[in-house]
Length: 466
Ligand SMILES: NC(=O)c1ccc[n+]([C@@H]2O[C@H](COP(=O)([O-])OP(=O)(O)OC[C@H]3O[C@@H](n4cnc5c(N)ncnc54)[C@H](O)[C@@H]3O)[C@@H](O)[C@H]2O)c1
Image (tube, rainbow, N blue to C red):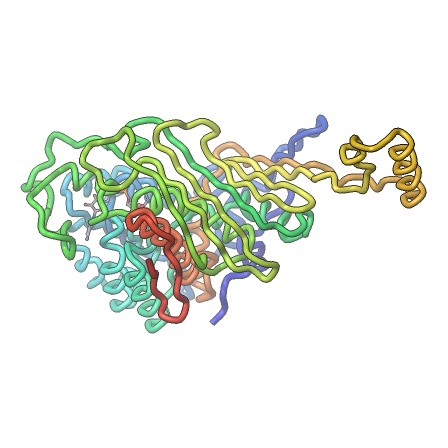
């Protein structure tokens, strides 16, 4: 089975230099190459993806399970992708059935039971935008019903869930795409291009953070006045989770609770780990992780921390790569970045920019160590050094900065990649193995935090040992 590699990624994203706004040195070259779809500008869906349709010439027909915050966002982005059409939705909260139709801007069949969507022969694919604890169940049912699946991140709610999902997708030979949309972004493709060029030299340290400082950033989402057991299928929400009396806080703020969500690990670490996997080409779980953190401000009954830090060791051909991830919901300074520290350069990826800065490792006389010597010794040391280095210094590589064009929608491109794979039956960039490995990173972080010890990935048994 073909697995993701960087060449596939570059091909899939069809990135061109003109897709970027290049900054610096007075050069302001506006990104052209805008292959807008459905009249939208700046979507930047590569032409090769916009043109695909099924053999009989029709669009891909999809249904969506979960039309809450993300489901509605997916539908707004899907409107810009001309190769697919939404034909149905399911949600457990009846008001959201209307929200989904408004987000997509057209009418389609709705249901409270997602299995009605799976029964429909005219549905090719299913989008899953439910709380994390439903991802496994809906994926397994969808692939068994012959549907291809786009499943939001984190792909799994537990290691066992992820492994079951990988096995089911592969056994049913279905296209599966995990929903960390940045995997399809030209920004990450550009960062990967720089990384793969070798300009950074060997990289053994990666630091990434994503911070926020608002109640919404800490998942205190609004609870609508009509929320009640009459409008919400509470039993349908709990499914395999522990029994609990109806509680709208748990329904609308499920990210705060281990029973349904995955905390900062599942919300933000997974995006950062996806970026790191795309940019480096590493596609393997960390060998071990150590987390710390706590609930410092949002003492609202949640069981996940509002500050989480994790150190990972990831095996690589050049020795371990050490990854430091940290997310704080109580200070948003320098909100979001991933930094790759290489021997000969530094790469910084923010939400909208990629910057490469060379390290000056050209040979030079290092006077500090000569400070404790006599004047005569220092002079001789410098003369000897000059005699040993007669050649002029080579020029440093240029610093480079790239920025996404305004309005670029990586979710629309990610959806277009998914539709394209449904037609070609080729693997997507962020397939089930890729998505599962990212999710295992989240589970390692959470297991270490809750057990207050190092969490180790046991590749032989595919389990976490704490
Ligand atoms: N890729 C991204 O950038 C991104 C952003 C936000 C959320 N997400 C992910 O998207 C998923 C949904 O998050 P959200 O913020 O939209 O949550 P949400 O609570 O706003 O919406 C989830 C919806 O799913 C529905 N649902 C749950 N189980 C269902 C089932 N079995 N059948 C039908 N409907 C069901 C609920 O009724 C709810 O309306 C999560 O996995 C989250 O991590 C991804």
